[in-house]
Every structure is written in C-alpha cells, then in structure tokens.
Length: 148
Image 1: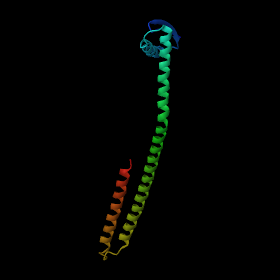
Image 2: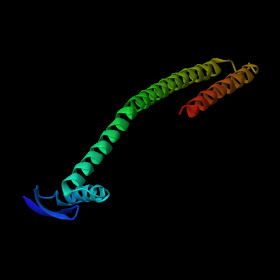
Image 3: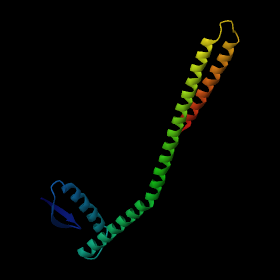
Image 4: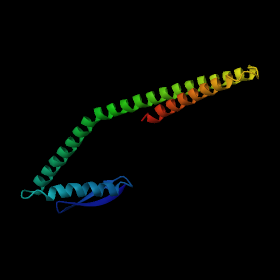
C-alpha cells in the first residue's frame, strides 16, 4: 500500500492506495480540488458537497452522451458489415467472371488450333472475341475499384 498526501480545498488529507495508483489518485484529487475551489463561501464541508455534486453531474452527463452514441455506433458497425459483405460479393463475382473469361479464352485457343490453316476468317473472329473478353474484364475491374 502506498501513502499519498492530497490537498483539497486547502486542507491536507493522507490517503492509502494500491501501489502504482498514486499518480491517478493525485490527478483525481486535483479535479476535486479545482471544483471545490470554484465554490465561494460556505464551510469546507459545503464546498466538498457541491464539488461532489458537480462531479456527479459531469459523470451523469458523460454517461448520457455515451448512451446516445451507442445506437450510432451500432448503425456504423452495421453499415461497415454491409459494405464488407458487398465487397466480398463483388470480389466473388469478379473471380467468377475472370474464370468464365479464362475458360472462353482456352476454348478459343483450342478452336484456333483445331481450325484448318486455310481458314483466314477465323483469326478476325477470334480477335474480336478476345477484345470483347478484355472489355468485360476491364468493366468488372472498374466496378470493383468503385466499391468503398
């Protein structure tokens, strides 16, 4: 146990506290002393009574503010969860689209290998298909980048 000497409203007090809590106790006493010194007139007991009442009022007001912000915090958490869910769905959609496009590319590659060499029209068709696939991938990537 540690011994701490406090001065509140001009009067010294010897207080015991757990080791390591001396600094916190001194800070709390400073707050009480500040409130008590702000009250003019009356006895020391009256000053301490009003200081305690003002500190209790401050604590109750702070508690009310915390209770008011709790629903907002819950709403924010729900919004974040929804955004994360949408992001995951968009990523899954992008992965599926990339897989479909990869399968289409592989199919085109197999088709072009199987096509006879004397079929000159097959190449432009494949080039157009590849460009369409690339456009789709770019569009999906742009959608994913827009997700917050």
